[in-house]
Image (cartoon, rainbow, N blue to C red; front, side, top):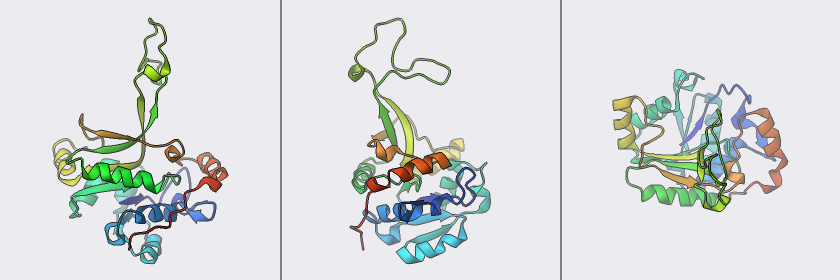
Length: 225
């Protein structure tokens, strides 16, 4: 499932902005097609003009309610809406904001998801270096002890979010109970991505910097049919 919100505030028309010669949306669809059949891919959006892309690539168009595409709507809410109306056993969410994701990473992530029963899978950036919270609280070291070699420190995982996966039944049950299920639980599996794949476009500056790297953009050509 590829989620796209029409009213992007920080990057106007983000899904149709380009890296090199290809839009972020098309790059993501082509990546998805290296693993999934077209009939298993859904574009989840309130942007009706994007229907042409779903026709061109023979994937599904899921019309999201406008209220679930507002800046105040949460990831929990629109995922719950999608899963209530879907017959899938598990969903893989692929964001169109990380264009440097490799198809090989998608394949490995999906294979982990298939073997993970009811667990939530979250793509992350792994940082094996001294880290603190915004308020300065140490996460993986103590100021009262000698600084250990970085390779011996516990890695800090920060969400990348380009790839996430939930078991449908588990998500819906957890949402019904707590009105949230996005973050899974203590049994989550975290999937580290390579450096370039972690690039996430949230601002115009992010987009400009991503465009500077366009010669490294993966070219996805081996599609499922």
